[in-house]
Image (cartoon, rainbow over all chains, first blue to last red; front, top):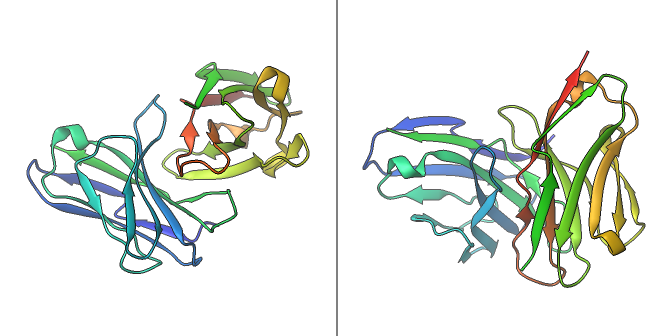
Length: 112
Length: 114
């Protein structure tokens, strides 16, 4: 069973609202990732982190930001939600030297 | 640039039949390769991975995959499908020593008919 937790599981929010998607892992993994998933499409990497105080943007242009103040916590924030942000957001982690990523159950975001 | 092609967005098999999900990759060097499974309203679960050891990789739930460098393929198989195998399956590739990016295919939805 995965030890990576995402909250909320589902979120419906109005345009222009600020939201934070939470991701926490209890495995002590140093590397963490945020992927965006749309039906019938590849997962796209939007942010990643090598460790505390390290964050990088992925390939997919994203208006979101992330922070990594603690090893176990990697929240993703949208300052002003738009309908185009409607998607599923998946958080993942892995320890250095091991390439089996552990994924959370995802947050399904709908912006109306 | 790396890419992953999964042939067939939908595959349907009968319970007890062979499952074959196809994955071809494009990479300048042999990469790390993965198969993930996603059940409805869940995240992705690692089925198996190839990291340059044995070319035939056994995973969970009776699945296995064979890395064929000459064919740039990493097809997923299971001898006998079970109803519980119905899910979406994603093939993914990561360049060795390269970027952190895990490149995914578009997924194959497996239906198992009774």
